[in-house]
Amino acid sequence: MGRPLDEILKELPLSTEIGNALVKRKGEVGKLLSLFLNYERGNWPEFTGCGIPVGDLSSAYLESISWATELI
Image 1: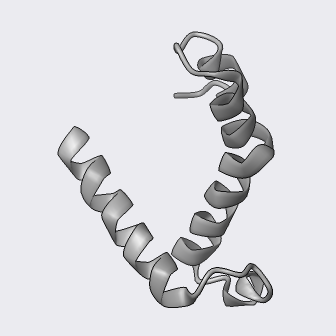
Image 2: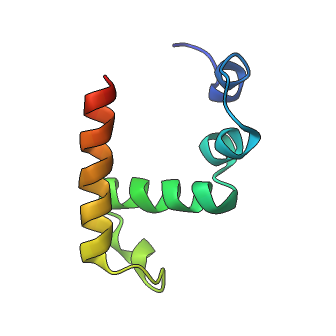
């Protein structure tokens, strides 16, 4: 879109929690977003000590893709 994400988010009706997660990876939602992005990118060392079994993460990731696809 040729614009910084934080600028675009100001125009959307999103909560501060979601905005902070998307821009700064802050809060619980930000942590989950970072975890899923690392999963998607294959950054496996990032999962050490996260406390979430990889099988659970895989299921949640696939469910999120399905949900996003339905929305589109």
